[in-house]
Length: 115
Length: 114
Image (cartoon, rainbow over all chains, first blue to last red; front, side, top):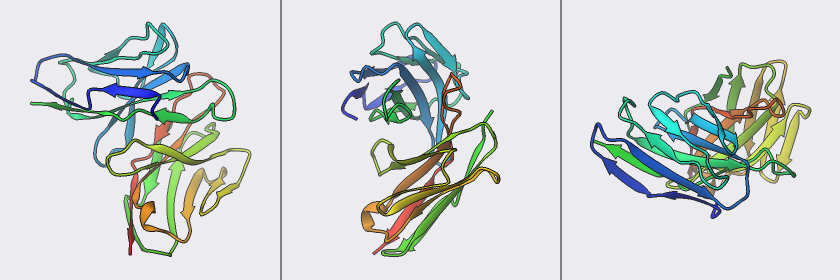
């Protein structure tokens, strides 16, 4: 949705470099998520945060780190420890109240290529 | 943790025919089952969801059925149209238990043949 921005759309890095992917939202949603999408593997959860200053590891957290210092922002750092970092990364948010509280809204994604 | 399996991985149907995509889940405590549609080059978007206290839900040409005993749920698309071509993902979660997170299936690429 337009309320979630991820930048840049395409990102290229050399192997061994850390890189930070941006995710910003103006939906006033409490929960934010980072997924990795690879062909044939669906969406796999990397990290998620239910509230500011708190976050939990997802299913594939190794080699990644996050912070949640502001409600609007949930940046993801792909470290040099991540063995296969080339992928499409999607950020999502979820509201905390109302009829749509269970729905996750996705950003446009960042395609990261590491060579 | 939860494990969601989705079949088939690819599906081609003639325009106007019906399409069915099936998912199974492992965690009997899962109680929320959404379906997302991802068109080529776009972000996933929720198309329909169902909670464990309901067996079936319908929204125009799409419907979802849930069998809690067998731990499987299905997406049904009737009178398919070219714009239904996309990748569809099922997911499951334990809502209202805290630390709510979705576990996704691996996706089904649906192609509608004109």
